[in-house]
Amino acid sequence: MVRTLRVFDTDPNARPKSFTSDYVGRFRAGQVLNGRPIAVKAWRITTGDPEVSKTVAELYGGTPEPWETSKEDCMEVLTDTDTVKVIVDCPDAVTFRMALYGMTGKPIHACDGVEFTDPEDPRYGQPCGCPTTFQERKAAAKAGHGPKPDQRLDFRLADAPELGRFRLMTGSWDFMKSLETVWRELEAVGGPALCSLGLELVEFTTKAGVDVAYRKPVLSVHGPASTEAGPAVPSLSKVTADSAPF
Figure 1 (cartoon, rainbow, N blue to C red):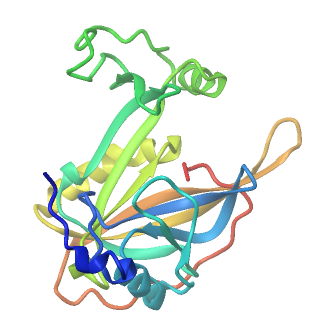
Figure 2 (cartoon, rainbow, N blue to C red):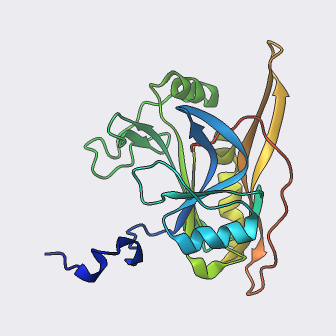
């Protein structure tokens, strides 16, 4: 039986908040407005902790506001900053898999690009059957019948490490290309590493003459983390489109 204090029944706003996630907030590279995904100019941070939302707004700009979600991170801050200093504890804080999600929100296909990797999947350890070339993989994912990168980065804010761990979830193919380098650099640090987590503007023109602009998440490893991380990195640029999940 779950025990509760009835003294808070008459004043529910005074009840201490309780969160079950192992991280205090998420960094997001976009949002959904009127059912349509759009890009944001800088990092969007969501959390379920009022104190966390207040602190990140003080550090990076923006105002804590509620947003519609069924998850615990019901507050969002649209910051003014597209690059922040973070502390990544070890290479294991950066994870990767290829995943295709079903209608239930759970993956129906999870692999490393060669074999199925979900231990609960009866196909675990068997060849996943994904295309062999990078372009074929992207085409299958775009068509909706192939997995795409499913990447997680757990970190603390260098400006306020005491807040706890945040998470970035991204399906960026560009981020995937940088992973092996990031893992090597984090391994070389051999402990908590001071990094910059940014949204880098990418602009190009397709063969059909269409101008494309989006932002990709970029993690840059600087070296061992110190107790004095310094102020937030100022915003670098604006964006017209985005490639990461919201």
